[in-house]
Image (cartoon, rainbow, N blue to C red):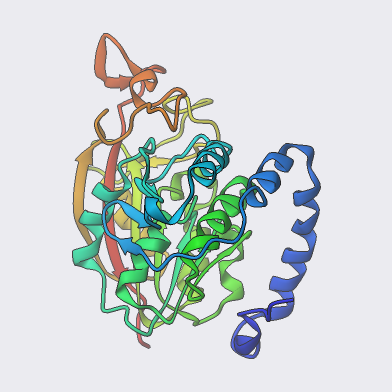
Length: 320
């Protein structure tokens, strides 16, 4: 059994509390719905590759490293993880065009990141780990993705089977557990999850707790247009998405982050979401943004709310 990578940090984090959540969630793997992912994980023989490229298209493996039979098995295994929400990827020559052009988001974020070489990073709500693999080129000591979704855990582990990057890890934890890493991270990425929580200020304060003094927070969030500090509270769903609580204006998002205790709160992007950045694809063949908007007025969602924008904000934890 491999040594737990967190063991060496046991005195710096709330290791026992993390272990309790880990043990509790082991039962999730026994659910019948997850057996397809377990089968996909074991469908290929061990294959090593020396080729990885952490670019806009995250590429792992070269096509000539697999036999024709292995190519077929790999393609079948990759399809088990449909829908692919984040990407794009290229796995041994197989192009995976995900629902989101996550590379566009990364291009906006990358210039705002502090130097991460030898640092510790958290990506909360990491999905399949696309941004973890993008972080690999920045040479962090450790990058941990947190996401309480078994499908995404399996997808990441499947990719890691070939990528073999020990400084990239995935925990089946939610952002509500990040305070168990007190003063541990140099940077926290909070991309596309804040509006899914009924207590955004509480979540931001947990992330503040997890950061070292002087540490950096990067937030990307769905939002609505407006010049005043206010948030939409959808009656049921927003753009057909369940579990959406508060959708802020940009001034509201900045205000949340500031009132949670962060300083140097600065917006670095405000973009109306369009159907080139989020769309239906072969690898995500279900409803996407075009289905979430009013077909007669693209400035509105199907529920009649303002259509989504995406806001980008960076902030710093005070040193004192």
